[in-house]
Image 1 (cartoon, rainbow, N blue to C red):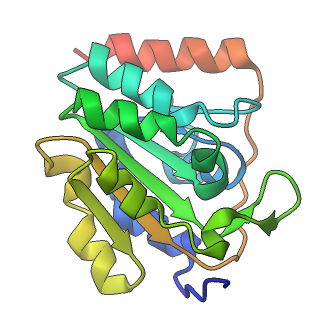
Image 2 (image 1 turned 120 degrees about the vertical axis):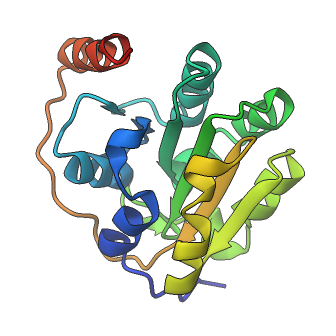
Length: 195
């Protein structure tokens, strides 16, 4: 059972997120890292993961817990989130009010060869998030639903989860540095310099 989502990630993700400077952002691998990098133009408030599949949600959770005055946004893909479903239960138990998660679900493992992911076979990550205790969970499949879900990222008084179903079109291109030390220092500066 494959998904026939028609939203284009290159327009849907920016429309859902809006001004990325409102957040500290942790982006998952592959497509979501390119999307966030493109959207932020490589700004230091965005930490783009590489080689750490499954880590984005837990990194965002830790960041939200230690930075309660800042809005934290995790942007991850379905394949990466499937690697760490237990992370959603931690978010549900700890209930950080400043954490939002956007899962860009194209139904494929883009990092490893574009094989079908389990979401193409019926797994519903929005239902899993809701069941994990993230009450503000939304499934977005249409343009109108993007506009209705966008305020959750900034206004939810508890963790928020948005499952953005998109087509299998490629993400925008973005050339990034894979120097982990450089990325860490830039993100740390954005974190500590914002007071």
